Image (cartoon, rainbow, N blue to C red):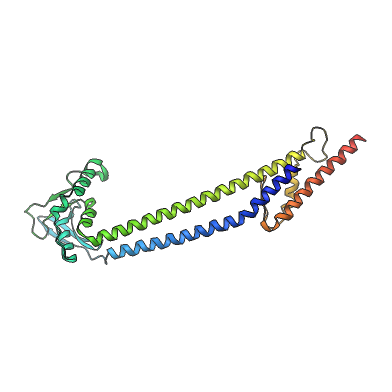
Length: 288
């Protein structure tokens, strides 16, 4: 009975902490999710700063080829329809006019970071890239479409090295993504702690149930029972407690409503005592 009392006291202690712990975890999770939604909204706002209303695309023909005028993060770009490459010469000119700078495409394409990134794309086999990633359009084409054309994977690095404002917006977006990643990680850690807490609760309730069963069957080999063999004290407990509001019983696991916990513990003690008294009466009857 001392072991039973100790186990009941232990489960009582944990049950006292559990509701508050769950409430705290849930509040923290909701707070993190609100922060997550706010960060997503900030990202969309940053993207909107970089973009304008998408202009109606139009096409230009030259040397029996078509070139499409479209947009990229607020910049107007010219795309060669035959291979999808983009006129980086006109893009840098546009950025210089808008931001009143004097950036040169030759300096950008010769920079170590551009050269190394282009080599990385060529050697890594990513995106199924074939051939050169940048080239100069032949003079057979009219001036309106001529210039250096680059693969779309190189477009972002050209914008970053040409526009300080573009670089700032990209850095802001990356910071927001990092903050969201951290928030998601913290939420996952809270969920892990919550799961571990409930695992401990399940182990303790199993221990309590097993201990009650051991006490019930301690004299089974010596004393014949008047109840069927399939009936255990756990079933008696279930029968006594199953009609209580808020009780959840699955197998030998019990979910105790916190406001009924003290009453339930007393009822379990009473069931165990009544069962032991019944065994003593049966033993006295056999002795007689």
